[in-house]
Length: 249
Image (tube, rainbow, N blue to C red; front, side, top):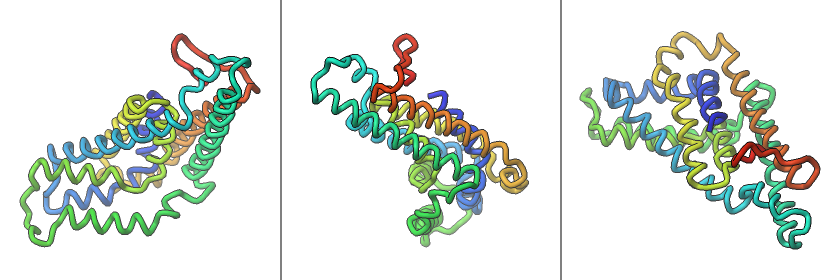
């Protein structure tokens, strides 16, 4: 959860401010979603992240599972158990490779995942615009609080490489609830910067200060290293590390 929170905190300054400032401006248009309603929109966004984390954790439980459980079977486990451990190790290494790619994208050394989802992002943007400013209601009055929260729920589905990275961590959490908590921590980490996204974007924060992207890339690489070590440990190439009841890898 700590890595997920740090990813959201660092990544939001280097990535989300530039990507989501347009959404904040859209929601703020004619004073429709401001103040407490903007807070509700962010709560809706974080709710979507948590629900996505629940699904990612469910997939992680089914596909990867807690690698420490496979380790507990020991080398004398059944052929099926050993095969499961090999599969778990391979999936963990795939996650590690994806994490390295996403870290390079954050540093500008690889194409951002959003490039491959440009068409989907455009369709999402048009839908978001219709939701935020429906044709039948283009007045200046603020939207109702439930509408602001619903707009936030839709905001959470924006195709985003940083969110994809966080979902990898949620899948690696091993259980649905751990995945949901991981994405909740990520969403809370993005909150400070995105609450001030308009102010930061107008001052070119993400353009003038590259360190937030570098910090986010470092967090992603830490996650990728953890996944790589988990995969190698599942294959028996390195030893598992467990601190108390927590399996580090």
